[in-house]
Image (tube, rainbow, N blue to C red; front, side, top):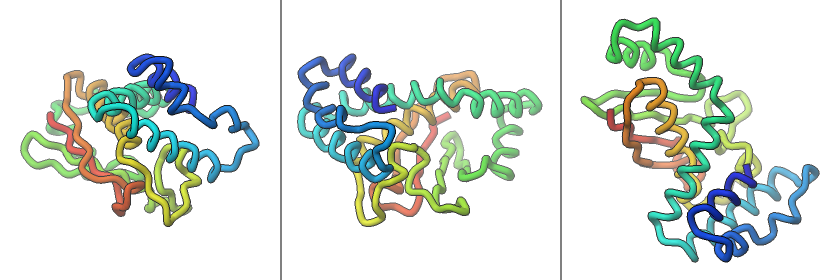
Length: 187
C-alpha cells in the first residue's frame, strides 16, 4: 500500500513532490514494526499536506482508495451478491441497515446513507481498518488527508454495489480523534 501512495503521488503531483512525500520510505522493510510504518505514514501525510493543495491531496488519497477497492474486491462482490437478492435498492439498504457488515453500521436519512466504520468494535480494538495505521499509537492522530483513501474505497464500494455514481464526504475519522469514522454517501 505504500507503493500505491507513491504511485498516486507521482501520478497527480509529479516526481519532485513524490520524492519529498516518500522521504524515509526506503528504510521501511518487511521487518519494520507496525508502529514504525504508521509513524512514517503520519509523517508522509504531513509532508503531503505541506506541499500539495487540498484538492490534489484528496485526489491522491481517493485514488489510493480506488486501488484498495481493487485489492479488496471480494468484499464488494459479496455485497453485490446480497444486492442481487433484493427486489430494490431500498429493500437492500434496509436489510444492510438491519444487519451491516462486521465493523460497520448504516443510517439512512433521505438520499444520504451514513456509513460508519467502528474499528473499536472488534475483539482486538483497531484505530483504523488500514493495515498501514494499525500501529498508530493511541495518543497520536494523523491528518484527515489520509482518510480520503477510505472516501475513495467507500465511493467505489457503493458505486459497484448500487451500479450508479455516488458522492462521498468524510464527516469524522477515528485516526483524527473521533471514536469512529463517519461518511456521508449521497445516493
